[in-house]
Length: 251
Ligand SMILES: NC(=O)c1ccc[n+]([C@@H]2O[C@H](COP(=O)([O-])OP(=O)(O)OC[C@H]3O[C@@H](n4cnc5c(N)ncnc54)[C@H](OP(=O)(O)O)[C@@H]3O)[C@@H](O)[C@H]2O)c1
Image (cartoon, rainbow, N blue to C red; front, side):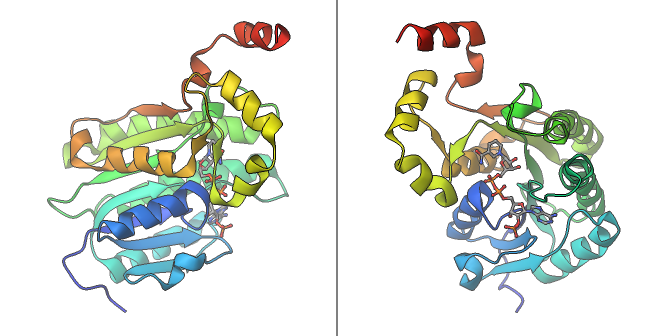
């Protein structure tokens, strides 16, 4: 069913879990019509009015222009476009990470850059990671290269699309607690105590805080900000690794 107009129409790619899902709730609460793209799951929010869940495999770039046309046909010209996806496949992680992080983001930005509403937010926000500039031992090389590539992809499109009034930015989180992992972290006092000591702000971040940063970059208070990367990690990546190691050793 077509949403009632006028509602700002936002697309959240990767909005079925974690921080993307938190953003879908935030935008819905602000009266947006939200198109949500995911690979497998439709979350409980699928029953929300003016919210549409679409299953699509972002790894198949050839299908993305048609996907973009169908999203605009449903919700109308775009207010804002968000990329929260992360490759979770088990096959070729190098190809998977680059296809899903970079090629899909590039293809959809290009397919949708002519579909932003005049007078809307005209904002694109992608989600990177501190793994775009630091090495996280538990993640594969493709993750790091994909996230690093997003930093420059955002800068490129910020320059290319600036003359159309489209702003393009990145949010790079550290590890955050999301609904899906809350029980795991809540069940480990040891991990909580560790993060409290490590992170300057004294706690882990939450998926909702990544969503809020993305929403800030979309909104009017960020109207002259483009091509930027905001790190959302409570200050952890400011610290020199050697100092951290010493701190833990002298406990
Ligand atoms: N969680 C963290 O601590 C953390 C830390 C640093 C950076 N980040 C970044 O933050 C973003 C969100 O992460 P998250 O952990 O909150 O979410 P997540 O659980 O990794 O969810 C990923 C989303 O991407 C979708 N997706 C994955 N592969 C896809 C494909 N081939 N085609 C279409 N959709 C696909 C998933 O759809 P389905 O649910 O349908 O599979 C889901 O909606 C990611 O970019 C991640 O790298 C997260």
